[in-house]
Length: 327
Image: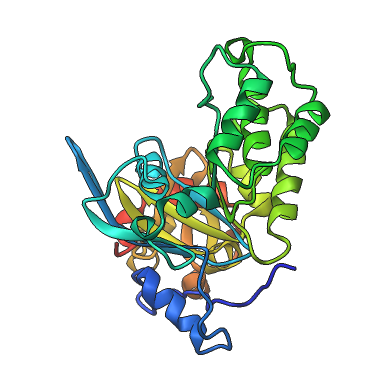
């Protein structure tokens, strides 16, 4: 079963600025004092950096413990795909390291690859292949691949077995990719916009499958997506990135508890004691809306509309007001 309460929730400082995100190592070490000494997380990312022309992935760090789903979110160009490429070893980091079950890729490349299941909307099989060809190829590369389970999923999802993959729609391709990874004994699923192009019913089925995947407390999911509704349903942790840096990270519950979405008259913006704490102010004909740290909500006058924000709303406001986050 999934465990809860393993990690302390990060708070808001008395200054109203979000505390600097702790390093992946520090955040995980904190749990050792709470009865989980020695447990190795499924995935640990430490200070990953990668330089491209015009873009720097800058010291990305986070920890994904066993039995949880982490949402990895940010706008296009934030560095999500670069991070996933460094984790799957299709790209090489210039600094930092990735540990899978406490081991680096260099220690056992075959086992490292075997433990990761990567799914995106792009088919990594040659377009002329058919289902039977994919089954043969998967068996050659992955010792734990189960042909029976693969065909069970193919038939359950009504995928054509005698058509070339070049004829598959986006939704069919994603189903094929899920069948390929779920037919193996992996430890970590990495989903790269994997629910894009899926109909609502199959998206719901995939979310249920992901919850079943982690329920034994030994498997985890790293889910990079623009469909924030999916994360609202199943994510335990959220990491937000922008311009190659981590804006903030915490449990989903802590993030939505640490902030309040407020709506009020524009005259409030003239009050320095309030305006200094507002994040991502959006003006309209009716006033303004913004996020404020929960610790500072007592400053608000009576009549101010206050709501618990969704993860999607938090992304919108925090990415606009990131200059006050202290990162």
